[in-house]
Image (cartoon, rainbow, N blue to C red; front, side, top):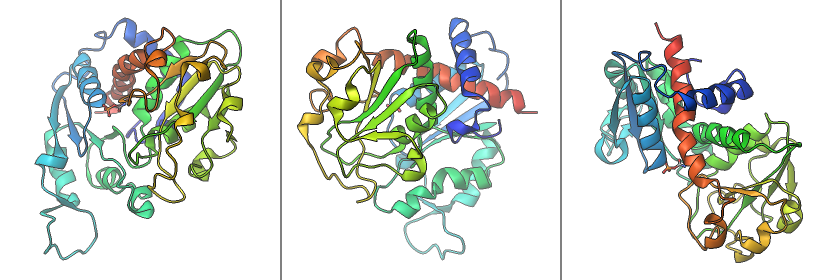
Length: 316
Ligand code: CP
Protein backbone atom coordinates (compact mmCIF):
# COMPACT_ATOMS: atom_id res chain seq x y z
CA UNK A 1 0.00 0.00 0.00
CA UNK A 2 1.54 3.34 -1.09
CA UNK A 3 -1.06 5.80 0.24
CA UNK A 4 -4.03 5.35 2.59
CA UNK A 5 -6.69 7.77 1.42
CA UNK A 6 -9.71 5.45 1.38
CA UNK A 7 -10.73 2.16 3.03
CA UNK A 8 -10.51 0.62 -0.48
CA UNK A 9 -6.71 1.10 -0.34
CA UNK A 10 -6.64 -1.97 1.93
CA UNK A 11 -6.20 -5.13 -0.11
CA UNK A 12 -8.48 -7.05 2.27
CA UNK A 13 -10.48 -5.45 5.10
CA UNK A 14 -11.10 -8.68 7.04
CA UNK A 15 -7.42 -9.69 7.00
CA UNK A 16 -6.37 -6.19 8.03
CA UNK A 17 -8.82 -6.24 10.96
CA UNK A 18 -7.35 -9.56 12.16
CA UNK A 19 -3.83 -8.17 11.79
CA UNK A 20 -4.81 -5.08 13.81
CA UNK A 21 -6.30 -7.25 16.57
CA UNK A 22 -3.05 -9.26 16.71
CA UNK A 23 -1.07 -5.99 16.84
CA UNK A 24 -3.23 -4.80 19.73
CA UNK A 25 -2.11 -7.83 21.75
CA UNK A 26 1.56 -7.04 21.12
CA UNK A 27 1.77 -3.37 20.08
CA UNK A 28 5.57 -3.06 20.37
CA UNK A 29 6.36 -6.17 18.29
CA UNK A 30 7.37 -4.06 15.26
CA UNK A 31 9.15 -1.31 17.19
CA UNK A 32 12.22 -1.65 14.94
CA UNK A 33 10.23 -1.14 11.71
CA UNK A 34 10.20 2.66 11.91
CA UNK A 35 13.70 3.02 13.30
CA UNK A 36 15.34 6.15 11.85
CA UNK A 37 12.14 7.14 10.03
CA UNK A 38 9.80 10.10 10.57
CA UNK A 39 6.11 10.83 10.06
CA UNK A 40 4.77 14.39 9.76
CA UNK A 41 1.20 14.82 11.03
CA UNK A 42 -0.31 17.97 9.49
CA UNK A 43 -3.54 19.22 11.02
CA UNK A 44 -5.56 21.80 9.10
CA UNK A 45 -8.37 21.21 11.67
CA UNK A 46 -8.82 20.33 15.35
CA UNK A 47 -8.46 16.84 16.76
CA UNK A 48 -8.14 14.87 19.97
CA UNK A 49 -8.31 11.17 19.04
CA UNK A 50 -6.68 11.30 15.62
CA UNK A 51 -3.78 13.40 16.80
CA UNK A 52 -2.95 11.32 19.88
CA UNK A 53 -3.73 7.86 18.51
CA UNK A 54 -1.76 8.36 15.28
CA UNK A 55 1.18 9.72 17.25
CA UNK A 56 0.99 6.74 19.62
CA UNK A 57 0.74 4.32 16.68
CA UNK A 58 3.84 5.90 15.16
CA UNK A 59 5.74 5.63 18.44
CA UNK A 60 4.72 1.97 18.82
CA UNK A 61 6.38 1.36 15.44
CA UNK A 62 9.53 3.26 16.41
CA UNK A 63 8.71 6.20 14.12
CA UNK A 64 9.60 9.74 15.07
CA UNK A 65 6.44 11.86 14.84
CA UNK A 66 6.43 15.59 14.06
CA UNK A 67 3.05 17.25 14.60
CA UNK A 68 2.12 20.61 13.07
CA UNK A 69 -1.13 22.56 13.39
CA UNK A 70 -0.86 23.61 9.76
CA UNK A 71 -4.25 25.35 9.75
CA UNK A 72 -3.25 27.86 12.43
CA UNK A 73 0.56 27.83 12.22
CA UNK A 74 1.44 27.12 8.58
CA UNK A 75 1.36 29.47 5.60
CA UNK A 76 -1.97 29.71 3.76
CA UNK A 77 -1.61 27.41 0.76
CA UNK A 78 -2.55 28.05 -2.86
CA UNK A 79 -3.79 25.02 -4.81
CA UNK A 80 -4.66 26.45 -8.22
CA UNK A 81 -2.46 26.01 -11.28
CA UNK A 82 -1.12 29.23 -12.78
CA UNK A 83 -2.58 31.46 -10.06
CA UNK A 84 -1.08 34.93 -9.74
CA UNK A 85 -0.51 34.77 -6.00
CA UNK A 86 -1.18 38.41 -5.14
CA UNK A 87 -3.84 37.70 -2.48
CA UNK A 88 -3.55 36.12 1.00
CA UNK A 89 -1.99 32.75 0.00
CA UNK A 90 1.73 32.75 0.78
CA UNK A 91 2.89 29.37 -0.50
CA UNK A 92 1.87 26.96 -3.24
CA UNK A 93 1.08 23.37 -2.30
CA UNK A 94 3.59 22.30 -5.00
CA UNK A 95 6.46 23.60 -2.89
CA UNK A 96 4.86 22.84 0.49
CA UNK A 97 4.29 19.15 -0.30
CA UNK A 98 7.79 18.74 -1.74
CA UNK A 99 9.36 20.56 1.23
CA UNK A 100 7.44 18.45 3.80
CA UNK A 101 8.72 15.38 1.93
CA UNK A 102 12.29 16.44 2.78
CA UNK A 103 11.60 16.05 6.50
CA UNK A 104 9.66 12.79 6.68
CA UNK A 105 9.08 9.35 5.22
CA UNK A 106 5.26 9.49 5.57
CA UNK A 107 2.93 12.48 5.74
CA UNK A 108 -0.53 12.28 7.34
CA UNK A 109 -3.07 15.01 6.73
CA UNK A 110 -6.34 16.20 8.30
CA UNK A 111 -8.27 18.69 6.17
CA UNK A 112 -12.06 18.86 6.62
CA UNK A 113 -14.68 19.81 4.07
CA UNK A 114 -15.50 23.52 3.81
CA UNK A 115 -19.18 22.61 3.31
CA UNK A 116 -19.40 25.76 1.14
CA UNK A 117 -18.54 24.30 -2.24
CA UNK A 118 -19.48 20.70 -3.01
CA UNK A 119 -17.37 20.51 -6.15
CA UNK A 120 -14.23 21.74 -4.38
CA UNK A 121 -14.82 19.48 -1.37
CA UNK A 122 -15.34 16.44 -3.57
CA UNK A 123 -12.11 17.22 -5.44
CA UNK A 124 -10.30 16.55 -2.11
CA UNK A 125 -7.93 19.37 -2.98
CA UNK A 126 -5.64 19.19 0.05
CA UNK A 127 -5.05 15.45 0.28
CA UNK A 128 -4.99 14.93 -3.49
CA UNK A 129 -2.50 17.77 -3.95
CA UNK A 130 -0.22 16.18 -1.36
CA UNK A 131 -0.61 12.81 -3.09
CA UNK A 132 0.29 14.52 -6.38
CA UNK A 133 3.26 16.61 -5.25
CA UNK A 134 4.73 14.88 -2.17
CA UNK A 135 7.38 12.25 -2.78
CA UNK A 136 6.38 10.24 0.31
CA UNK A 137 3.23 8.19 1.12
CA UNK A 138 0.18 10.13 2.29
CA UNK A 139 -2.28 9.03 5.00
CA UNK A 140 -5.78 10.47 5.30
CA UNK A 141 -6.55 11.54 8.89
CA UNK A 142 -10.00 12.83 7.72
CA UNK A 143 -10.48 14.63 4.48
CA UNK A 144 -13.48 16.37 2.90
CA UNK A 145 -15.05 13.10 1.88
CA UNK A 146 -13.67 10.32 4.09
CA UNK A 147 -12.27 9.25 7.43
CA UNK A 148 -10.83 5.81 6.64
CA UNK A 149 -8.76 5.47 9.85
CA UNK A 150 -12.00 5.87 11.82
CA UNK A 151 -13.80 3.35 9.61
CA UNK A 152 -11.01 0.80 10.12
CA UNK A 153 -11.15 1.33 13.91
CA UNK A 154 -14.92 0.80 13.70
CA UNK A 155 -14.42 -2.43 11.74
CA UNK A 156 -12.02 -3.65 14.47
CA UNK A 157 -14.59 -2.77 17.16
CA UNK A 158 -17.40 -4.54 15.29
CA UNK A 159 -15.22 -7.65 14.95
CA UNK A 160 -14.34 -7.62 18.66
CA UNK A 161 -18.06 -7.55 19.51
CA UNK A 162 -19.26 -9.87 16.77
CA UNK A 163 -22.50 -11.76 17.37
CA UNK A 164 -23.21 -15.41 16.56
CA UNK A 165 -25.39 -14.53 13.56
CA UNK A 166 -25.21 -12.18 10.58
CA UNK A 167 -25.32 -8.82 12.38
CA UNK A 168 -27.79 -6.05 11.74
CA UNK A 169 -25.84 -2.77 11.73
CA UNK A 170 -27.64 0.58 11.54
CA UNK A 171 -26.07 3.93 10.71
CA UNK A 172 -28.40 6.57 12.14
CA UNK A 173 -28.38 10.32 11.66
CA UNK A 174 -29.04 12.31 14.85
CA UNK A 175 -29.60 16.04 15.36
CA UNK A 176 -26.82 18.59 15.87
CA UNK A 177 -26.93 22.39 16.06
CA UNK A 178 -24.07 22.91 13.59
CA UNK A 179 -23.44 21.76 10.02
CA UNK A 180 -21.09 18.76 10.11
CA UNK A 181 -19.24 17.03 7.25
CA UNK A 182 -20.15 13.71 5.63
CA UNK A 183 -16.71 12.09 5.94
CA UNK A 184 -17.32 9.73 8.89
CA UNK A 185 -20.67 8.53 7.55
CA UNK A 186 -19.22 8.05 4.04
CA UNK A 187 -16.30 5.93 5.24
CA UNK A 188 -18.49 3.91 7.61
CA UNK A 189 -20.80 3.11 4.69
CA UNK A 190 -17.88 2.14 2.44
CA UNK A 191 -16.51 -0.09 5.20
CA UNK A 192 -19.92 -1.72 5.84
CA UNK A 193 -20.29 -2.47 2.13
CA UNK A 194 -17.27 -4.78 2.58
CA UNK A 195 -18.90 -6.64 5.49
CA UNK A 196 -21.27 -9.61 5.59
CA UNK A 197 -24.02 -7.75 7.46
CA UNK A 198 -27.59 -6.56 7.20
CA UNK A 199 -26.74 -2.86 6.88
CA UNK A 200 -29.34 -0.09 7.08
CA UNK A 201 -28.87 3.69 6.88
CA UNK A 202 -31.56 5.79 8.54
CA UNK A 203 -32.05 9.55 8.46
CA UNK A 204 -34.83 12.10 7.97
CA UNK A 205 -35.76 12.93 4.38
CA UNK A 206 -33.43 15.64 3.10
CA UNK A 207 -30.33 14.03 4.55
CA UNK A 208 -29.64 11.54 1.74
CA UNK A 209 -25.91 11.09 1.29
CA UNK A 210 -23.98 10.97 -1.98
CA UNK A 211 -25.62 8.23 -4.11
CA UNK A 212 -22.23 7.20 -5.51
CA UNK A 213 -21.26 6.21 -1.94
CA UNK A 214 -24.64 4.77 -0.91
CA UNK A 215 -24.74 2.51 -4.00
CA UNK A 216 -27.28 -0.21 -3.19
CA UNK A 217 -27.17 0.10 0.62
CA UNK A 218 -30.62 0.13 2.23
CA UNK A 219 -31.98 3.54 3.28
CA UNK A 220 -34.92 3.66 5.72
CA UNK A 221 -36.52 7.00 6.66
CA UNK A 222 -38.36 5.49 9.67
CA UNK A 223 -35.77 5.35 12.47
CA UNK A 224 -37.87 3.10 14.74
CA UNK A 225 -38.30 0.57 11.92
CA UNK A 226 -34.58 0.68 11.17
CA UNK A 227 -33.66 0.08 14.82
CA UNK A 228 -35.78 -3.10 15.14
CA UNK A 229 -33.54 -6.04 16.08
CA UNK A 230 -30.35 -4.10 15.35
CA UNK A 231 -27.18 -5.49 16.93
CA UNK A 232 -25.20 -2.26 16.46
CA UNK A 233 -26.36 1.35 16.27
CA UNK A 234 -23.72 3.68 14.81
CA UNK A 235 -24.77 7.29 15.27
CA UNK A 236 -23.50 10.33 13.41
CA UNK A 237 -24.79 13.71 12.43
CA UNK A 238 -24.15 15.07 8.96
CA UNK A 239 -25.40 18.13 7.10
CA UNK A 240 -27.51 17.90 3.97
CA UNK A 241 -25.69 16.65 0.87
CA UNK A 242 -28.26 17.85 -1.68
CA UNK A 243 -28.70 21.27 -0.05
CA UNK A 244 -24.99 21.16 0.42
CA UNK A 245 -23.78 21.94 3.95
CA UNK A 246 -27.21 23.07 5.20
CA UNK A 247 -28.90 22.02 8.45
CA UNK A 248 -32.36 21.20 7.11
CA UNK A 249 -33.70 19.55 10.29
CA UNK A 250 -32.80 19.45 13.96
CA UNK A 251 -35.59 17.01 14.79
CA UNK A 252 -35.03 16.07 18.44
CA UNK A 253 -37.03 12.88 17.95
CA UNK A 254 -33.97 11.46 16.20
CA UNK A 255 -31.85 11.68 19.37
CA UNK A 256 -30.66 8.25 20.53
CA UNK A 257 -32.43 7.54 23.81
CA UNK A 258 -32.88 4.52 26.04
CA UNK A 259 -36.36 3.99 24.56
CA UNK A 260 -34.90 3.93 21.03
CA UNK A 261 -32.24 1.42 22.07
CA UNK A 262 -35.01 -0.83 23.55
CA UNK A 263 -36.17 -1.44 19.95
CA UNK A 264 -32.82 -3.12 19.19
CA UNK A 265 -31.55 -6.61 19.91
CA UNK A 266 -29.76 -5.39 23.05
CA UNK A 267 -27.77 -3.38 20.50
CA UNK A 268 -24.37 -1.87 21.09
CA UNK A 269 -24.03 1.87 20.65
CA UNK A 270 -21.21 3.37 18.57
CA UNK A 271 -20.06 6.93 17.82
CA UNK A 272 -16.69 8.18 16.56
CA UNK A 273 -16.58 11.06 19.11
CA UNK A 274 -16.58 13.92 19.90
CA UNK A 275 -20.31 13.78 20.67
CA UNK A 276 -22.75 16.28 22.14
CA UNK A 277 -24.51 14.58 25.04
CA UNK A 278 -28.29 14.96 25.26
CA UNK A 279 -28.37 16.35 21.72
CA UNK A 280 -27.15 13.39 19.66
CA UNK A 281 -27.42 10.82 22.43
CA UNK A 282 -28.84 10.71 25.94
CA UNK A 283 -26.55 10.26 28.95
CA UNK A 284 -28.18 6.92 29.77
CA UNK A 285 -27.18 5.42 26.40
CA UNK A 286 -23.60 6.70 26.22
CA UNK A 287 -23.03 5.76 29.88
CA UNK A 288 -24.57 2.30 29.47
CA UNK A 289 -22.56 -0.90 29.32
CA UNK A 290 -23.61 -1.26 25.66
CA UNK A 291 -21.70 1.87 24.68
CA UNK A 292 -18.54 1.10 22.68
CA UNK A 293 -17.35 4.67 22.20
CA UNK A 294 -14.22 4.40 24.35
CA UNK A 295 -13.26 1.08 22.74
CA UNK A 296 -13.64 2.72 19.32
CA UNK A 297 -11.32 5.51 20.42
CA UNK A 298 -8.82 2.95 21.72
CA UNK A 299 -8.94 1.09 18.41
CA UNK A 300 -7.91 4.27 16.58
CA UNK A 301 -4.34 3.49 17.71
CA UNK A 302 -4.40 0.03 16.15
CA UNK A 303 -6.11 1.13 12.96
CA UNK A 304 -3.40 3.78 12.47
CA UNK A 305 -0.68 1.33 13.49
CA UNK A 306 -1.65 -1.38 11.03
CA UNK A 307 -1.89 1.20 8.22
CA UNK A 308 1.52 2.71 9.06
CA UNK A 309 3.02 -0.77 9.37
CA UNK A 310 1.81 -1.69 5.87
CA UNK A 311 3.18 1.54 4.44
CA UNK A 312 6.55 1.13 6.21
CA UNK A 313 6.85 -2.43 4.89
CA UNK A 314 6.54 -1.05 1.33
CA UNK A 315 9.23 1.63 1.83
CA UNK A 316 12.83 1.12 0.66
N1 CP B 1 -13.07 10.59 15.78
C1 CP B 1 -12.12 11.53 15.56
O1 CP B 1 -11.56 11.63 14.47
O2 CP B 1 -11.84 12.31 16.64
P1 CP B 1 -10.97 13.65 16.58
O3 CP B 1 -11.71 14.60 15.66
O4 CP B 1 -10.90 14.15 17.98
O5 CP B 1 -9.63 13.33 16.01
